[in-house]
Image (tube, rainbow, N blue to C red; front, side):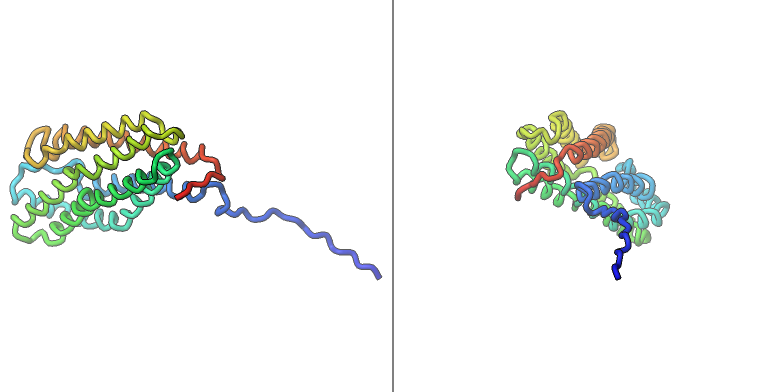
Length: 251
C-alpha cells in the first residue's frame, strides 16, 4: 500500500509587529504628541497654571483661587504624576538622534541630564506646591500664598536647565556632519534660550510684561516653545523614517 501525504495548506504567518522596522523608535515617538496633549489639558484646562494667574493679588484672592479650583487642580496634577514619565521617553528619543550625529556622546548625556534636573523646578515643584495648597485650602492664607508664589515662580522662572538643554542641542546640530536634524532647528533652539533669559525678571516684577504672567516673560516664550515642539515632533518623525533599519549606534 502506498500512502499519499495530504497536501499541507500553507497559510500566511501572522504578522509579528515586533519585527517591524524601528518599531521601538515609533513607540517612543508617539509618547511625545500624547504627552503634550495631556500636558495642555492638565495645565490649561484643569489646573489653570497656564496662562498663569496674577502675581499682584493678596492672600484672600489666592485662597479664593484654590477654593474655586481645588478639585480640578488635584485631579489634573494626579494625572500628571501618571504621565510625567513620558517626558523621559521623549527626551531619550532626542538623545538617541543626537548620538547618531557626528558629535561626542557627551552631548546626548548632557541633554538628558539637563532636562532631568529641569523637571524638578520646572514641573514637579510647581505641581506639588499647587497640590499642597489645594489639598488643605483652609490653611493660613499666608501659607497658601507662599505655595502659590513658590509654584508659579518655579514654573515660569526655571531658566538655566532649559537654556542648557537648548544650548546642547543647538551645538550638536551645528557640529553635526551627518545632517540628522536641520540647522534651522539650532537657530530655533537659540531663540528658546533667549526666551528663557527673558523670563529672568519674574523674580523682581509683580505686574506688567516682565511679571510671571507678562507678555514678555510668559507669552512670548510659550509661543516660541509651542512652535519649537511642533517642529521637533515633525523632524523626529522624518529622522526616524530616513534612518536605515540596519544602522547601529555605538555607545
